[in-house]
Amino acid sequence: MQRIHLASDHAGFDLKATLAQQLTGLGYEVVDDGTHSRESCDYPVFAHKLCEAVEREHCLGILVCGTGIGMSLAANRHPGIRAALCATELHARLSRRHNNANVLCLGSRVTGVELALAIMGAFLESQFEGGRHQRRLDQLNAPA
Image (cartoon, rainbow, N blue to C red):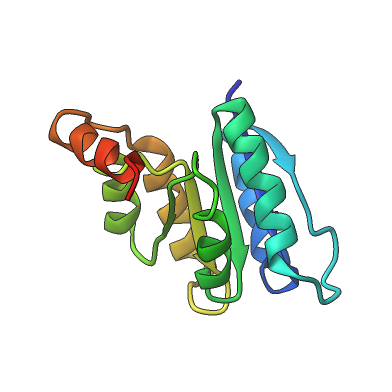
């Protein structure tokens, strides 16, 4: 069973619950890194918690906030994280195939539930292609 971490702020709470239910039904072990209510909270707290787990466990993660922008900004501050804010299934596929993204970011206020589920599916079913894309990832990891 593959483990996947989920986290959201208050704006993403309901979509996170829907994603978790779908993932559980698909046989994933879901770890909910919070938030655990719709009460207003600060997204960086949950982004950092999830990213630390993804780095430590070498697994995938999904972050949800109102637009996905805040979560992606917070997540990409971690050196082992390649977080992709995806608005389409193509974004999700290519983020995995070309960028080896390990965290999917979604915006609950800008992406409908059905589309979010399809984006998540595309993200999870895609694999890194390596080759020329690995060279580019190596360049991202090199000192500036």
